Length: 606
Ligand code: M6R
Image (cartoon, rainbow, N blue to C red; front, side, top):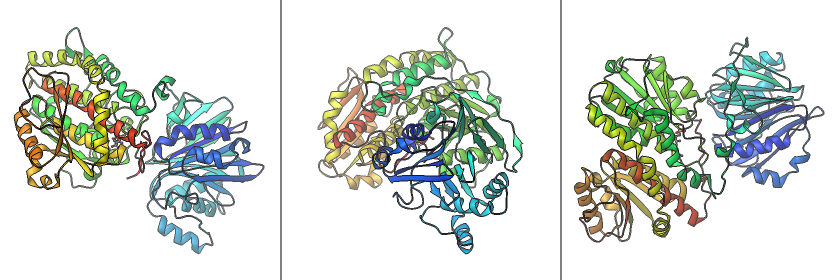
C-alpha cells in the first residue's frame, strides 16, 4: 500500500520520479506528490487523485532539483485529499511514507508541546516533526537512528533534508524498500518494478535497516546506526511483462497468460520423462510432518482452501487453513511436527508476513509459495516454491491464483508420493493429466462472447451468489471476490449445501446465482442445491464441464461448459469463466479494471 520513490542524481529528477510513480500506482492511487530540493529549498507539489492529475495540475517537467522523493497514496489516516497527500514537510525535512505509525497520537502530543504545528490528519506528519526535533540536537545519522526507535508500527520511508542537500535517507520496518544503482544516480523504491526502467541492480533493505543515498554512493546502517555491508543482486530484465501490449487492461492480458503460467510451472516442477515431481531439497523429512497449515489473504487464502481438498485427498496429513490476519493474533498451538505454508503473490502482504514471522519466532518449519522471489516472505521462509507467473500488475489476482493452486497441487502430489500415501500409478497418472492442462485452459479462454452477454444481468442485480461444493467451493469464493472487487456488485460465495441454513432467504425473483457443478463426485448434490434456488426464483448460471450425459435439471437460465478433465483439475478450468465474468461486468460499467476503487495491489499495512 502506498508507493515511494527517491532519486539522487547529477541531473534533474522530476521526470524520472513521475515515470516511476506511474509504475507504482498499483500500490495506491488516492493521491500523489513529489518533493525536490533545489538551491537550498524543498519544493513540495501534491494532488488528490492519480499521477496524471498531479501532472495536469503542475508543470512537473520544469520542477528543478537533482534530489527528490515521490509518493502514491492508499489512505490509512486522514481522507484522500491534497493536504493528506505525501510528501509531508517541515522547513527542513520532507518525508514520504508507506505503513502505519501506531503511536502517532502520543508523538503528536509530545511534538505539539514542543511547538510543532501539524497541517494534515496523517500519522506520517509526526515523522517529519520528530526528525526535525531530533536534528536540533543530533547529527543526521544519529537523529535518524533515534527517530526510528521512537516510531512504533510499520514503515518504509524516503526522507530529504534542506540542510543536507545531496542525500536521501531510506528506512524500513515492516514495509518493503529497495535501493537501486544507476550511472551517476542511485534510487530508492517500494519495489524493483518501480526501478526497473532505470536499473536492474538492486539491494533490499531488511527490517530495522536504513540507508543514505547520494548520487555516487549508498551507505547502509543497522538499527543501532552501525554501518553494514549488503549484497547487490541483478534482476532479470523481461520488460515486456510490464507492458499491456495489445490488451486494453493488464487484467485481460494476465487472464490470457494463464496457459503460459501453467506451462512454466510444469516446466519448472515436472519431470515429463519419468512422470515425477522435481522437488528434492526439502529442508525437513516429510514423514516427520503430521500436519500442515496453509495461510494467506484474499485470493491467496482461496488457494489455501483449494489446497486443503487436494492435500486431504492425496495424503493422510491433518490440513488446516487460516486467514493471516486472524492467525497472527490467535493463541496458536505450535507443534514440532507441523509445517506452515504461506501463500502470497507479492510476498509482501503485511498480515501474511506477520504470520510467518510468528511461526519463525516459534521455530516452526515454514514454506513460501510466492510469485515475487525477492520478497520478504520468500526471503524469510525455510523453503520457497516460486510460482513463476511473471509480474502481475492488475490489482485483481488472476494468473497468480492459477499459479498458486498449481504449485500447491504439485506439492500435495509430492507429499502423497514421498509419504507413500498416494499409490505410484495414481501419482503418475495425475502428473500425466497435468501435462494437458495448458491446452485445456487455452480452450476455456475462448468463451468470451457468451460471458460478455451474461455479465449485464449481474450488473443490473442488487446482489448475486456463487455456489459450489467440494473442489468447487473455493472457486465459488474466488469468483465472488473477483466480481465484487471489480464491478462493485455485491457477490457472496457460499458452500451450496449451506444455503438452506440461512442465505436461501436472500434469493428472490431474478437474482443471478452462479452454480459451479462439474460432473465430479459432488455433482448430484450440487444440482439438488441448484434446484432449491431455482425454485425460489434465482436466475442460475450453471458452470459445468462438457459431457455426453445430459444435465439433470430444468429451468437453468444459462449454461457454460468448460473442457473435460479429471476431478482434481476441474477447478483450474472453472476459474476462467468467473474471471471473465468479473472482467466484462467491470468493462461494461466503465470502471477502472486494473485499479479498482479503495484497493491496492500489495497490502503492506495491517
Ligand atoms: O500478494 P498477496 O497474494 O499476498 O495478496 C493477497 C490479497 O491481497 C490479494 O490476493 C487480493 O485479495 C486480490 N486483490 C484479489 O484479487
